[in-house]
Image (cartoon, rainbow, N blue to C red; front, side, top):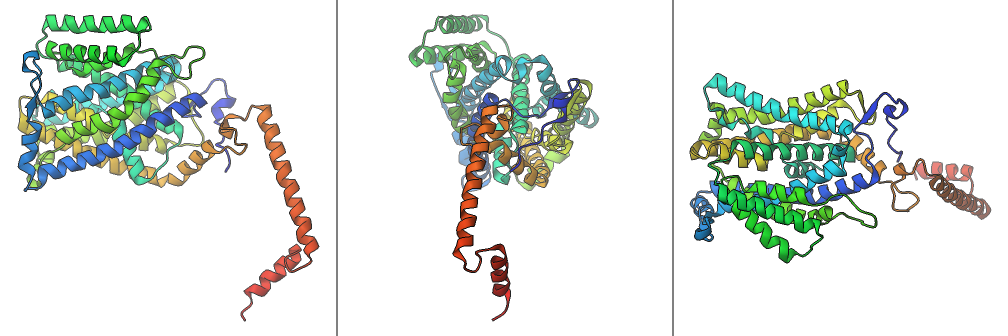
Length: 486
C-alpha cells in the first residue's frame, strides 16, 4: 500500500495545507476519542430506535409518557424533577462537561491553538450554524410560523454522525474525522452560548452566587493540585444544583467545570489531567448519559398524520430544511470561502466532494437539537413534539444523503486509511510519519535486503530441485499442461 501523496501545499510556502496529515499525537488522540464516540453513537442510535418503538407501539405507548414524567429527587432543594428533566438537565451536564474539556484541549493543544489553522474550521462551523438559522427564519417568516426555534437546526451530533459511519462501514481518513470533530466542538461551544443567552429564565442571584463560589473553589483546588474524586464529585454536584436553581440552564455548569481542567502536558506527563479525566468520563457520557437522554426525548409519535405535520407547518419544515440544506450549504460554503481567502490548499489525496459529504454529516443534529427544541417550545408541548419529529426526520435525511456521498468514495477512503496505518518496520509508528527519519530508511533497507536474500535462496532451491516448476519455463509449461483438458 502506497503512502498518501504529499500535498502540493508542502512545496509552496505561500500555501497552507487543509485536511493534511495530522501530527502523530493529535492523530492518536482523535482516534481514541472517536473510537469511544463511535461505540456511544451506536448505543445512541439503538436508544433512539427504542424510544420511537416505545412511543409508537399501541400496547406500550401510554407507559412512555408515564415513565418519563415520573418525578423524584429532594423537593426541598428544588430538585423534584421528572425523569425526562433529569436526563436533559442532569445527564447532559456530563455530556457538556466532556465538551468543555474537548474545547479546552483544542484551545491549548489541538487545532484551535494556532489562529491560522483554527480559522478554517471555526469559519466553517460558524457558517454551518448561521445558514441553518437563516433557512429556518426564512421559512417561518414566509409561512407565518414562530421564529423561536431558529437555533434548533444549528447543532451537530458527532456521536450520531460516527454511528452512521459505523453502520455504512466507511472508514474516513483521520484528517476528515478530525475536521468533523473540530466542527462539532465549535458547534458545542456556540450551542452552549445560545442556551446560556437565549434560554435563561428568571435569574436568582443567591443561587447563582453560590454556583460561582463553588466554581471558584474548584478552580483554587485544581490549581493547588488537590486530587480525589471524593472532593470534586460532591462539589460538582453542589455547583450543578445551584446553577439549576439559579435559572441558568444546568448544563452550563458542566461546561464551566470542563474548561477549568488543565489540558496541557507538563514534562514527564503522558496525559494531562484534563485528558485523563476525559478518558474516564467520555464512555459514561457517550455510552450512558446521551443515550438515556435520547431514550426519554426521542420518543415522538410518528403516525402518518404526525409526519405530514412535519412538512405542513413552517416550524418543523424549517428545522428539516435547516438541517439538510442549511447545514450542508453552510459548512461546505464556509469551508470553501475560508480556504479561498486564507490561501489554504486542499490535500491532493482528497477532493471537494469529500468536504461536501462531511458537511452533509454535520446535518445530523440529534442530541443538542432535541434539547434546544424542548427549550424553545417549552410552552407549547404539541409543537415541541412536532419539532423533535422534524429533528429526527432531518437528521435521518442528512445521514442518508451523506452516506450515499461517502460510499461513492469508500475505496479511496479505505486506501488512505490503510496507508496511514501501514507500519512495515513494526516500530509502533506508522511509516507515513517517518519519511524524514534516516533510521527508518536504514531499517527498511535491512528488511528488504533480508527479503531479497531469502527470495534468492528460494530461487536457487527451486532451480536445484530440477522438477517441473523448478525454472520459470518449467513453471509455465506446468501451468500450460494443467490448463489442457484431460
